[in-house]
Image (cartoon, rainbow, N blue to C red; front, side):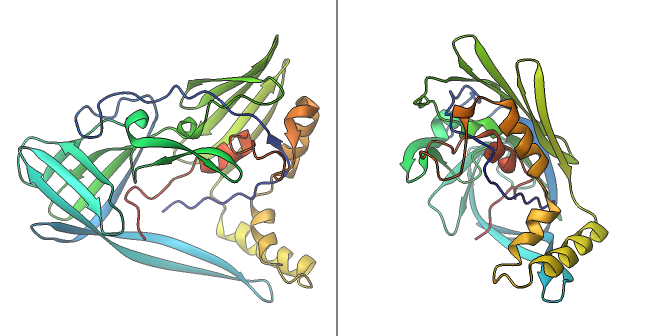
Length: 302
């Protein structure tokens, strides 16, 4: 699995935004093909077993750790994911052993082998809640999963991924109004001022571009190579080994955001730039949304 890490810090916009992304059928009325306007991300897994009420697929991923002495450890791992399911009247219902959430898919038969589809609907799947650091949405497990294609040996799963689904409409205390343009773009405005944030999501890249008054800050990143990981690990140990939390510097070095952060500070109005411990209103900052724009597991494991 593609694994992306980024450490967040001071380049934060203390703004909240208006949600306008998604649509389609309700979660208990499956169908469609996931044409909700998001970014389609598809992964294929090997099926380990299929029974009358469960299937297990194998997730393969790479785990890397920076050890004392600046030694990088890379380990290939697997995870067996078991999902409960039932089929009735050409409707597939899947659920998770650790959750009460279920998703319904429409198919053409009552056999698991085949193609099953549904449409992402944030309004039906997510509930706005207030947390210690601001408002946010709590959504069903894999609410943006829109297609599952089963063969005897594999399952191919597609998400209609929409990063701006996390954006709330609570207004900023300084008067900045917010609007989502689509799943990868949103605006923050006040009087005649307008900030545009564009998220970058491709098969190989993640990032964002923040534009204001004809100028912009752009940040793009890709999966680091093994040599880049080794170099970051060695540097983290060499420069920070006396710090009891020196391992944290590994990610900071590997996914360096400092130039982007400094650019944001110079670009945006001062009232929109603050630390992570600001007013509890920074959960929809561009940097935090960019961090969520990742290749996530398509069927969640424990």
